[in-house]
Image (cartoon, rainbow, N blue to C red):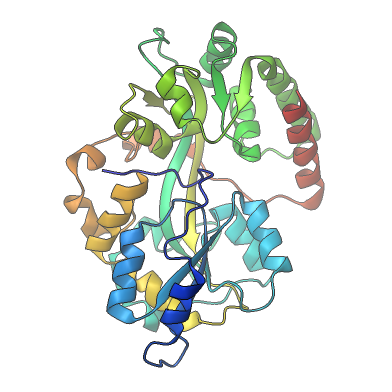
Length: 356
């Protein structure tokens, strides 16, 4: 069963050749050209989903990729109108895109399968309270990944992670995600991961610089855990699932007791989309239970399609790292958007951290 990271660096398209795209455009005419330009995290769409959608609708999915929300934002601002029809930003970026007028309001009449989305993800989300601009694609958490055959004292907190990183210096990695790494240091200090106070951010930077000599920064850490180059990491729950099941490597995943990030990635349609009806059709398509199962079994992240839950492989459905119990959920925090001054301050902290 092939699980994939939402953010691995593989540059694989679904059906990306120019010849295939041309063939799609030469099919029976629709109100819009039978094409959907999807800008997505790498390895975050099951190729089978795209193939089925093409077979059933004649709409060809042409995928391009981004590696971070900030890269996605740059792409949206710099691309020609019509370049992207559908995108998958993370929740905090969705809020910013809404504020900047870069997202199209969704048409509920074109999304009858919204009824399948769990109520908690259908409305009341802080970044899009009425669900007017986004539909949740998947969700997950950021925490501690470790190999229990090497790290014999199980970490339970961010404080433990800092201590164990020193003990396993050179074999500890963190994912390349600025606000999540800074957020871990803030949670360690007892602050919100959305902290904006300059003094508290400076404290977090000092903690990060204590950590830096012992770690590498790498999102493509699957093989590193497999061959033992990494035994401890700050990463995503879905990645731990991939390492455990696809790479057949014994790893555990922990949500630290101080708390951590709950993130979601969303389906959104840019205001400049050339094929918005096709984008609506695709969103509606992936909200079908059997397609949601196909998707979740590919990349290993939690689905919000309620009728899909009993259809999931029990290995997936019963994994508490993917579907945490209520007690763990109560310790999670969502990332908010920041003002320009705070963004600049966080960017500078991250650059100094990367520089070591």
